[in-house]
Length: 180
Image (cartoon, rainbow, N blue to C red):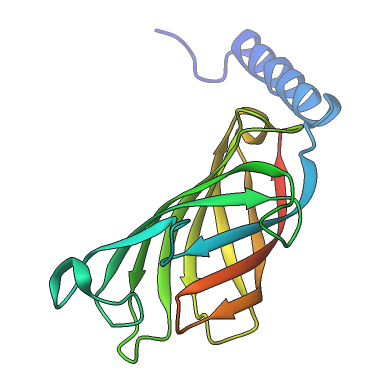
């Protein structure tokens, strides 16, 4: 029968524990990179250059995105400047749901897919509330791919232009993310 106070096993355990602690505290820790981006999303529900459409709501697909319960899909151009003529760097593709009873806020889930520039082929996954009556609002960056693999972060959305009558808007997204 083995003695629990056996000097050999206790010595081995002590040396093993010291080795693990040494490795844990002396190897360099991987520090995340921080990337700051500013880009513009052009959201157009009307016109020949329409990039968004309602697909469901209280009155069916003809519901306005400004009414509670309406669901819309988007495939908006993303540019590096505030005008639609600025360099196209990607697309914002996803879903908006009007989730506030008075119709003044959207729940948004969309991917920013970079198709040109330094981050070509990478994506950022955006999720959060968009109380579009506010000039500035914050949202979460919950995931990413490519250059932005293992990303987490936040963004500030600012309305650059809004035409509520024609349902057209230009949104400035100032994004800060940490990734490896």
